[in-house]
Structure formats: C-alpha cells, structure tokens
Length: 370
Ligand SMILES: *Cc1c(COP(=O)(O)O)cnc(C)c1O
Image 1 (cartoon, rainbow, N blue to C red):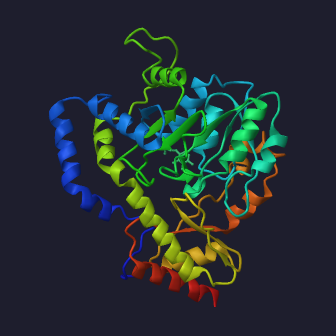
Image 2 (spheres, protein in one colour):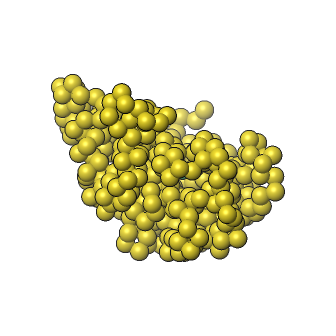
Image 3 (cartoon, helix red, strand yellow):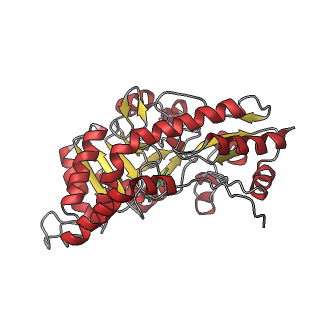
C-alpha cells in the first residue's frame, strides 16, 4: 500500500472538531438528565426541524428506512397496492415498499438529473397505484411541480425520499415539505447526520402525524393500550441533542458543498468524455457525481484508489435489476438508469473540503483522460 496521504470520499472530522465543545455539552446534558428515549431533546429537535422545514409536524425516528415504511403504513398502503419510484436509488426506498407488502413499480430516470423522469410516471399509473416516491438523489431536488400535478390528477399520494436532500429546495420550498410526507435519514454520511442511525418524518397533516407517532411506539397512543402492530422506531435523546447542535449549521454546510461543487466544475468541466453535474438552484450536493463516458469507469476508479483517492459508485445495480426483484420486474425497462449505473462515479465532497485537495483529485482524473 502506498504511504501517501489518503483522500477519503467524506471526512467528518472538521465538523466534529468545530462543534466539539457544543457536542460535549449536549452529551453531558443528556447523560445527567437520565432521560434517553423520546424526551425533551427529541421534542425540541422535532420543533426546531419542523420550523426549519416549514412544516407542521416533524417526527423523530430511528432511521430513514423506518421513515419510509412508517409513512407508507400511515397511508394504509399494503398488499395489492402499487407504489411508483425510481430504480436509481439506495435499496431502502424500494425495500420500504416491499416491506409493507406493496409492489414497487420502477420508472426510469432523467439522464441529466439522475432523478425519476416525470414524463414516464403517468403511463405507469394503474388503478392500484397509491403513491409516488420521488427521491431527491444526491441532494438534487426532483421536479416537484410536475410530480405533484400528476399525483393530484390521479389522486395518489407523494412521499418524498429526502434522505440525501436535507436543506435542498425546489423553487424556494424545502424538499420534504411538498409531498404528504417527507422522509429523512440522519445516517452518519448524510448532509445532516447523527452519530449512528436516525431518521425523521415531516408532514403538514395532523391525522397522519398522529398515526405515525402511534406506529413509532408499538402502535400505541397510550402506553400499553396498543391499537395495531407498530414498530420500535424512536429517535434517541442523545442523537436528538447532537442533531440540535448541528441543525443551525446545515445551511452553511450545504453552501460549503455547493462551493466545492462549483470548484470541481471549474476543474473538470473541460475534460472530454466526462460529464459534470448541472448547476441548478436548490441542489445541496450530498454527492458530487460525474459520468465517465470516455473510458471504463471501474478502471478509472481503480486508478484513483491506487493514488489514495476515495470514490464510490452510487449505485452499481439499479433496483429493478437486483436479483430479488428480477422475477417480478423482469419486464421493467429502465435503460437510462442502467447506463447511469455503468458510468457514475461519486467524488470526495464535504463542506470544508480544501480546494488544494480538489485540485489533486482533478489532476488525477485529468491524467486518466489524456
Ligand atoms: C440513506 C438512504 C435511505 C435510508 O436511510 P437510513 O437512515 O440509512 O435507513 C433511504 N433512501 C435513500 C435515498 C438513502 O440515501
């Protein structure tokens, strides 16, 4: 192995160092309170997050995956129902649909945005369609005007997967505040993250919020008076206290990511055979994902790894091509997602990423294209 400096794809150390005294204070506050599950920190975080997002209710949960399936359960979606989503996403999106017993219907993506192609949603709607789950992939907001209009026309619900898009906006509105539910993840690599698993639901609907809260604690509104089979899916006090330290910084961090993306564009924009992401309003660059067209992506990734540069392929297999869905979705045709899965490469990005390091990454990539 080489001894040169390693460049990871994500470095959380600058963030943790900058917040150390505040995180320590939050830790002490929770430890001394003796309250560890849904207490004052979770309630305060829920209020602060709801205010930030501009929604009536935020409900802290123990993961983004739980947020997705509790949203679907709260909407009464289950066996016999269909839910339209993108195949080019983390598996949890499709998994949540399968988990509640419904059938995921995969609709191809747009070439430039990697997000679900709204033009293809309407032809996929059937009498069994109950919901659409757009995923704001890599932090880029989907075209919510189109998606909301199609959903309204056909009477289906929109559940936004915002796991990668905390703080992203569509025409000034927060992702997750437009659909009937917004589903967030605080997994350590996300733009707003806990120090372990965590998640959240956002909604403006009082009844759905109450149902989601009930499902969060074993299907009970009143302790030991369980109404339905629910989950144990609570956000911990400790994570909520840490998230309260981080939430006020999210806009500055997202601006840092946007700055990093702008610099990459300057450095990489002229390389033939390489496509950089479009600069669009509201994109918060959870990932900076290029397309490698002029050469073999895996070979480029291996060469960068040899030079100590961390990259990732999100995602190598679109969901409709996963073995577990092969039988039921053998006929699904999503050629744009399939090509993307062969070409995408996500580069190091975090808010404090040094322009000099970006220069080294770009130089290593550039060498590969000469
Ligand atoms: C991370 C992620 C999830 C799942 O969130 P967890 O908190 O890890 O359960 C769901 N959807 C997408 C698009 C994600 O990136």
